[in-house]
Amino acid sequence: MSLQAIRFTRSEPYQLRILDQLLLPYTEKYIEINTTVDAYNAIKKMQVRGAPAIAIVGAISVIVEVSHYLNGKFKDQSFYDLINIDNFKRQLIKRLNFLITSRPTAVNLSNAINELIGIINNSSVQSIDELFPIIFEFGTELYDNDFKNNFKLGENGKDWILNDLRNQGFNGDFSVLTICNTGSLATSGYGTALGVVRSLWNHSKSLIEDNNNNDGDDHDENQLPPNKRAKLDTIKFSRVYPLETRPYNQGARLTAYELVYEKIPSTLITDSMVTYLTSTLKNSSSPIKVCVVGADRIVKNGDTANKIGTYQLALICKQFGIKFLVVAPKTTIDLQTLNGDGIIVEQRPSIELQNVSGGIINNQTNQVIRDEETGFAINGKVGVAAPGIEVWNPSFDITPHDLIDGIVTEDGVIVKDSNGEFDLESLFK
Ligand code: MRU
Image (cartoon, rainbow, N blue to C red):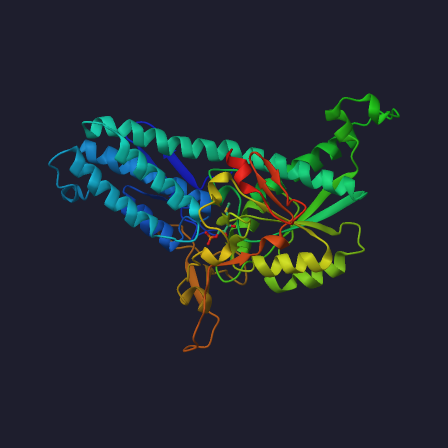
């Protein structure tokens, strides 16, 4: 069973619960989202985060809110000062426009909610009962498609990486870099860039198993079917190095948690260790060959907004000849914005940089100290900055497209043409 950031009960009584990512990795606690305002607060506080996950939580919160309204359980019942269906639609759209403002950089949320607003506006329903199935279908489809597409992203990324290494004449083990958290916790499940790592690891495991079951026969590779031929590969993922990802530590808290949970060989590094690690491993038995990152918004020319630190990671990769891949579903693509200059970068509160938060660990037992009554870890906030210092805390940066080798989507991997340009429009034709 993989980690689930989002749990949704699809029948009466509809229920949406999210794993509170502020408490991870020390405490696994699900919280209920009953309204679009609950979703707004959870997204803004980053109890749920990651571009696909926040869009899904936003869209499903609408299902739950409207179902509660129909049952008379909506705590803000008077908000919908009802006269008729048009009035209801107007009020709902007002709440949806508010929801979009929770986090401005990730385009998945605004794409999804704006699409839903369009559907609500264009529907000719006569009652809320008739509107409900439309809202339900939209949210569940978004959720299910994200889940399906994540597996395709994983496979497409894995195949591209192995082929590329084969074409380079590379043989043997290789390592991978990644930043932030792009796994099950950031999506409906499996993940985007971390999904590629999962697929690479599954491929490695199958090679190891195959080796163990080797019958000793000398196979002629060309005589074998393609699936068997792949098994004769000697190119094998061996380890991933997730960056800690300051200031919010998605790498150390969340990606490391997923990697430990899934027993994928991994070693945590701080953001400032990449250059030294890469040069240290250069002539080792498992050099770093590829870096996979997610995206919050990929604009028309391929410039990509992602977690702060991604741009400098791409520059390091350029310096060392490491392939740099952006992995994201098509819902993260924004063709309306021409280049990175048009992307709004969210500023986060200074407290997230001035403090680190986590469980308090007992020095003697190395265990997290838990509240006696609730059993939950006591979440510590530890200051790491001089009080009074001014802080700049942008949540994302924008990697120029010329530093990106490929954009992995569910429909394939897009690479640059001979003029160095990505044709992302081709994905929507
Ligand atoms: O601030 P966060 O944690 O929401 O930032 C998340 C990222 O930058 C991810 O890389 C991106 O949303 C893709 S998640 C599949």
